[in-house]
Length: 289
Length: 164
Image 1: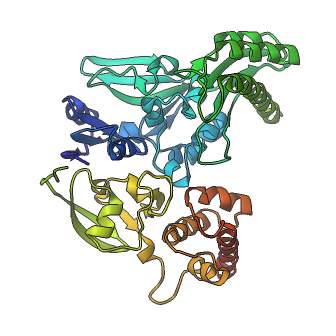
Image 2: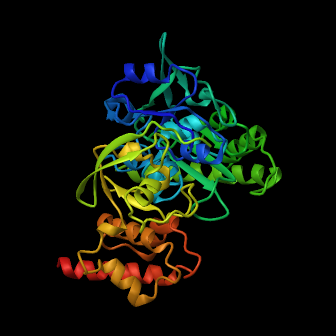
């Protein structure tokens, strides 16, 4: 490795100064960056550790929002007293990232910035309407997660910008989420297809809000608005689920590779969406008195 | 590749001892443990976080030491395989791996011991499925895993009996 400098800022202002120059890479969990350096795909001269900055590792929950620091580890999110029960689907997605050792280090913010088309946490974040809080030299901006990834391994951060935290609206009553993926092995593998779903159901069983996101079937994870619209106003009966499945199959634009053909991925992503809807619906029913 | 000359001094607690070591800014913990601190029980297999042979604990968190920069452990507590037996007394996970024949070539074993001990501290009574998922990041090409899992579940039983 030809890293010339390692710095560990303790405030956002210090971090901004540290990442301002060319050749800086941010280090959260390091599970992508250090592999990239090892394989020669990344060649930063300066590595900026983000984990000593309180805002970047904090997990904060108030009446309206849940804030997950961009460098908070998946382990910390999974062992937070509230996040897994508020967002069981997001927890499912984070728990699927690599081994126990990887989950101990990797972060939702890092998974997002790395911007793999097959990243597990991204469809779950999109389904939950997560927003990215971004700090740049000219101030702050927010961007929806579905707009943050602009291509395979490409994100929307301008040079000098830092992803500070992910902000999720606290789920309304009668809301739950689910994430499912298909991999050839049950563990330590990369998604052939993934599906994140968040739905809200009122006391009569009618779906009043729905967001459906798919992963590993296009250059970026996609929010499929038509799939959500197919569910809203229904009682999540078979015909409504079939319409959502049809919508995601239209939206999917997968490649064929060693993990599966485009045709197979298009089929499977529909199956996953249908099952994720059923899982989220079951969670809502379980939570009802 | 030119070696950077700008070495950093890092202070950490390693296996309970206050330690200071020098490292390059891009050097990973696994390399420093082995080459600087002569703690060669930690093995380097894939060097990309896939095989788990370099598993260590950093502040009670199970990690691959090939995916941690040595500079990151400033002020933190690191536990390696060398810190697990108490003098000549093996930890139950080590003892049961011996009794069940849960190792052959031994390259994965230090990582398996560290990861299995972490599992049993986190969950003293894991099911076989839970143990297999927790240890999925520790690859073994010799045993076929079955004897490792039996040893870990047996060690869990021993530890529960000791605690009772």
